[in-house]
Each structure stands twice: as C-alpha cells, then as structure tokens.
Length: 537
Image (cartoon, rainbow, N blue to C red):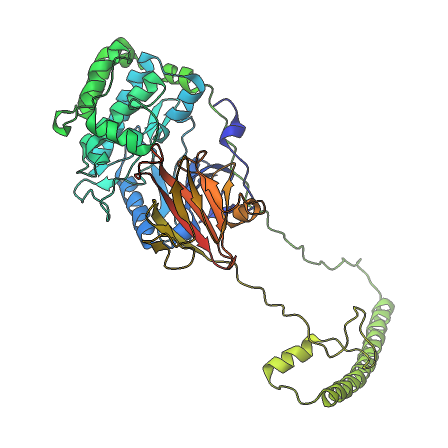
C-alpha cells in the first residue's frame, strides 16, 4: 500500500498490549465483531490477531459462531488462504491468530486504482478458485466471499475470514430463517434463505471477478433489499464486462446452482486464457502493479526488560590487617549496638507513651460522642484515622473523629449484548430488559416519513464519527453533544455506530448491520443492528 500509516495504526488507550502471550504492535482494523491487531510469533513471523468484543463474548450464540469459525479455519490449508496459527474460543475475550498477509484487499485496490486489467482478473479468478477448492475440500462453505475478504499479496490472492462459514453437512438456515452474508455478493438461493452449498461460493466468485473488472458491484448499489431483489429476480447485465471475461463469469452466475462452473473448471479456463504467462509464473508481476509497493511490517516489540538488583558486595580488605584494627572494629560494633539498643528503648518508651495518650484521647472522643459500633468495621475506621489533638481540626480542615469517605472503588459498568435487533415501523426497543417490544412504546423507534430516522421520547441519540470500534468511552464523548431525541438515518450505513443515553444512566451502542430505506413511505423500510448496553454507566 502507499503508506504504512494507513495500514498500521498505533494502539489506543482502550487497546490491550498483550493477548495470550502475543505482544500487540499495531492496530490493523476494527468492525462490529471486534478488532484486529498486528503481532508476531516467537520466531518473528507477523500474524494478525482478531480479538472479539468483550460484550459479544458473553453471548452464547456469538461464541458458538466464533468457535465454528476457528474449527473451519483449522481444517483449511491452501496456497491462497491465510493459515490459522493459534486460537482460543474460550478465552476472555476469545481470539484467533492467522498469518499476516501484506497487501491491500481487492476492495481497497479497486478504490485506489480503479478496475483491474483483464490479465489481473484472470489471475485473481484462478487464485480465488484454487482457494475455494481447498475450502470446499475441507467440507466448508465460505458464505461471505467478497472483495474485502480477498487480500492481494505479492504472490497472489488470499481468501480470508471464515466468520460465517458453515460445514457442508450442516443445515444452512439460521435460527430465524434469515439470510446471512453480504447482500451485494450473495447467490440467489442465499438471498432467499435457501440451501447454501459450495455452488453459492462460485456465484460470489463471479460477482467478485465482475467487481474487479468493473470497479463496482455487478448488481448495483443501494438498499440491501433492492439489491437482493435484483439478484433473485433478474439476469445480470454482462455487456459492460470485457469480452474475454464474459463466458466464465456467466457460468459462475447461472441461476441454477447445478449449472454453475466448478472451481477446478475456473482454474483450468483461466490458465488456458493466460497461456504461456501461466506456465512462466507471471502472476507476481501483475500483483505488484495492482497492489503497489509492499509495505514494511513493523518489527516485533521487545519483551519488557526485567529490573535486576545487584547484590551488595563487601569491600575487600587488604591483607595483613593488624590486631589493633580488629579491636577498634570490635569496640565500634559494641558501641554501635549499645547506642542502637538505647535508641530503640527510648523510641519504644515514647511510642508507648503516645499510644497510651492516643488511647485516652480516643476513649474521650467515644464517650463524648455516645455509643458506637464495635467489631471489625469500627476497628478499620479507627485504624484509618490519624491521631490529632481533640479540640482542633486537622491540617486538612477535617475535625478529628469525623468519618473518611469510602475508598472502595465502584465496579466498572458491565456491557450486556443484544445482537440481531430488528426495527421497523411496528415495533420498538427498550434500553431496559426486556428490550424487544411488539408495540411503539419503547425507548427507540424507527420512523419513516419524507426521510427515515431513529427517535425517542426518553433518550438522547448521537452518531459516532471516525474509526469504527466504538465503546463506552467513545459514546460518553459523543453524548456530550447529542443530536437530540431524533437522529436522521440519511448518513447511516452498514457499520454506522449510534449511541443512546437513557435517563436511568444506561448507555447503549447500536451498530447498524442492514439499512433498507429506499421507499420510506411504503411501510417496508427497516434497520437491523447489534445493540450493547452498559448499565448505570
């Protein structure tokens, strides 16, 4: 990439510095699931550490999904996938580590340089198809193949992120029957919550190749519901694609999964079109042109240097020390011991006298104040106060005998996750449990008139701007200047973060997943979001 600072961002105050023995060197990115950091193995190999948000880690469904991701990644090995190095689904929080791939994603490369030339698209399709062979060979369906999940390394593409992958022999439906994936790159059967198979990944491969050649999604942009409708009910327009690519993309995008080309056939077709370049290994030169100069990865951080205290060594004495020096030293030692003992005796007598005086003073205070509680609590209060004359106030202006403020620190607010929340014009959400309401009397409502918005009668709302990955501190800052009780959603998109403050002191964070507001007056608009609530924050 053009600038290492775009890739490797410094750690922030709320970032950990160590995860399961891995020292974190930089932040690589963040999203609704968690944050990704750069670290290194003991041997110095760079790795990407994905750390799950703590509030999501407490959700059993999410932890089950993360455990499935780890299991899938362990089964996949291939030249065009990022190898899993280490993971712990039961950690606090859960995390996984894969080999770090130096290079931009396909989405970033296209955004920076525009559509790829035909040879690069052919190399891309061949590499991703080979990765799918490895994934499917392990009995896994990726289910979320898209440009941001394809990294352009110096020697070819890498397919990453098995976050919603599914074993081929397991059911493809979620608990609610909803489709899971990225709308613009779903297959028709996936968009309609039907059976998802390896052929669904091939459809996504065709869409990803078309995006690389066109610089935009083949089925267009816009609200997710509109894109999904086009995928399910319309034929793709391939006329804008370069002519050399149309046959293989058309085979990938066949409406009937049984008629789609296989990954092995894609590899063979692309190699045939690349001709001698394929046999000569010309791929790396193509990737250097597309991905730009390789970024220098920061070196591993050194382990903290332990502080060692040097032992005190006796000063060597010259040989031949006479008896008089020995006698002088013995006399000095005896004299010092006598003086020390005398000092200790005087100090002990003085301490005893002060203790008796202090006890009498406290007894007088207690008698003057009336009966008091006894036992450990009273003893602790007594030991915490400083001796002072009874008739005067202390240096800090505090009258002796007055109680000190409690030193017990309050526990930090606990984050409670509520994933997969649906908001339309018939329901609402409460900040306090139970959060889901079938009526419009909740704290957060979705409304659509000329435009769509979130509104509340009880709470104030604020959009979080800047880098993704907001937490409690980010919401506190955003809510210092809230946007009122109504927040228009015109500027919101998937991944947008909205903070809500309830009069009870609870603070909620909504992370938008899907926004469908193209027809605001139709009654079919909605938003879905993951919600996290910090109680009494």
